[in-house]
Amino acid sequence: MNKDFLNVMYTRLSVRQFTGEKVKREDLIAMLRAGMSAPSAVNVQPWAFVVVIDRGTLDKLCEALPYAKMLEKAGAAIIVCGIPDKDDTYAKKYWVMDCSLASENILLAAHALGYGAVWTAAYADKDKIRSVREILSIPENIIPLNVIPVGIPANKDEKPKDKFKEENIHWEKW
Ligand SMILES: Cc1cc2nc3c(=O)[nH]c(=O)nc-3n(C[C@H](O)[C@H](O)[C@H](O)COP(=O)(O)O)c2cc1C
Image 1 (cartoon, rainbow, N blue to C red):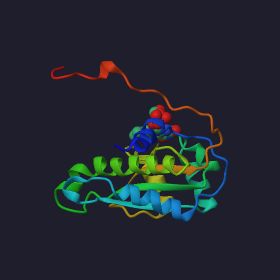
Image 2 (tube, helix red, strand yellow):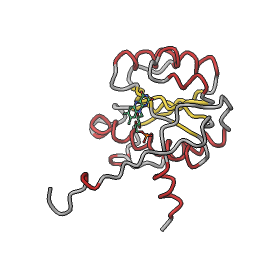
Image 3 (cartoon, rainbow, N blue to C red):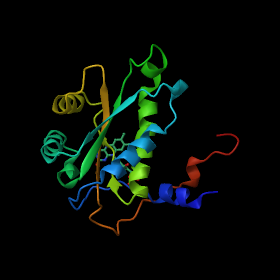
Image 4 (cartoon, protein in one colour):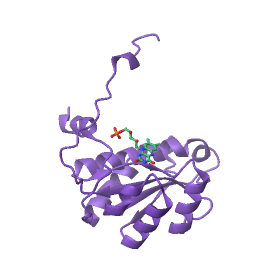
């Protein structure tokens, strides 16, 4: 059993304050590899990733997205996008689940590598989707699910929430 991996999961938290330092390209690639390691329905992989490191583009996203103000000091952002028309059946039905799994893998990989990250919503808000599409020239058939700012956490002492609740578990029957 790999307890280190469990520890990564148990200690992940949404990080919203960054130092402004850059994110190493090799670390971004490792996060993307983690994203693409996710399962997907019938292995269709209905996803694509836009990686933003340009300060001007990060600022544009920051301006357009009221709940993503942490982009101001992020070193990078990964935008996880869904491709519902990647096949005729499964992508249409399951792209949100598939891309969400890829997103969680990215959040965990960022944490494991010593970065902070947070899911900020694009989908399912029409205005946010339009803004992100416009800023990043994303085609109409591709849907940005989220914008994940990544950076070095400014507050190293921030603690994860303990969300384990016995009452959420039903053994055998509800
Ligand atoms: C679908 C989804 C949308 C979210 N949207 C935002 C957002 O727009 N801005 C933000 O700061 N956090 C956003 N979050 C992060 C949640 O607020 C966060 O995961 C939750 O409060 C639990 O905290 P934790 O991630 O530290 O455990 C989002 C998370 C999910 C899964």
